[in-house]
Amino acid sequence: MERHEKALEILHNGTVIPAIPLVLDENRQFDEKGQKRLTRYYLEAGAGGIAIAVHTTQFEIRDPKYNLFEKVITVVAKEIEKFEKETGKVIVKVSGLCGNVDQAVKEAKIIKDLGFDAGLLSPGGTHHLTEEQMIERTKEVAKIISVIGFYLQPAANGRRFSYNYWQQLCEIDNVVAIKCAPFNRYDTIDVVRAKALSSRADKIALYTGNDDTIVFDLISKYQFNENGKTYKAQFVGGLLGHWSVNTHASVELFNKIKALKEPTNEILTLAGQVTDMNAVLFDARNNYKGNICGVHEMLRRQGLMKGIWCLDPNERLSNGQAEEIERTCKAYPYLTDDEFAKEFLKNYKD
Image (tube, rainbow, N blue to C red; front, side):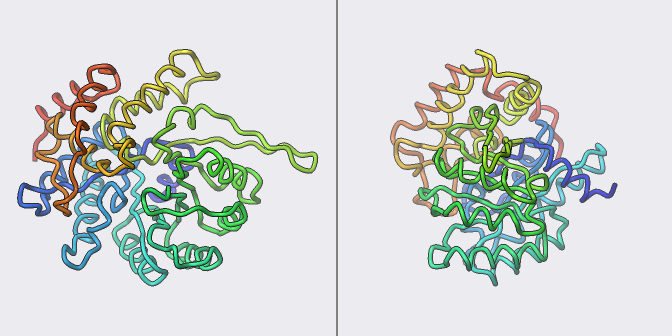
């Protein structure tokens, strides 16, 4: 089995895919060494895949003013390739894709040439397109590279879609997975049901992007009864901004969940604690204004980033957010990577 086929098999079976941030220096310039070090942290922590050029990475990397899209994804792709050669492991390489069909197709060709396995096709900034046009956009990108469909919450510049939209998307050849991140249980059910009833159900993997209910998504088993038949589906993994921090602890929790036959009281308790920590990291109380900086702050605390700088100088932590991050770290130390990060940095070599 060739590398790409193996990567798609890993994606299909379910794994941990952190949506990783952009590393900048104090002058808000791209920190290539820092980006390599952070990428290596995710790989050493046990992530089965890496997602770059997504919301957590800052969509502004595509702005001609910065011109960072191709540079950043190339650095990450090469670091993954280096890790694969050293370990013999295969890592699922995912890149975000954005914009109208022309831009999305252009980005798809770039990531294909760089050896990425799939493109996470964002609906962000496409409110002017009809659902039919969005389906055509997906078909065009799927001709180039395997597609991960994406239900993005409105608070992050996403939009709501009809059940019919997801039915059509599931029938597109080379759609291999869907990241479900509407942060809404009703919308989540639409995606799960569309996948379950699709003629391509066995070819599509469901990934939670609902950072507010990660564990509950992973332990839920869905069943739909239609026309005398029973259809089942469940989430097999996660592609999450939340997993861009404390990744080693998240991998351990994910593996524990995967090994369960039935949810335990311990897992149900952890589910609420993970959501509590996520609410703080993502700044849910302030409509997610500090979500990228919240991720940066956690990584800064652990020495994995030097600062919380973003391309936009107006991006910052909300009042009290740092204190809340400290609270949850003290309350749930077993959900953090404090010790793992310390050991990683001690052994890391450029």
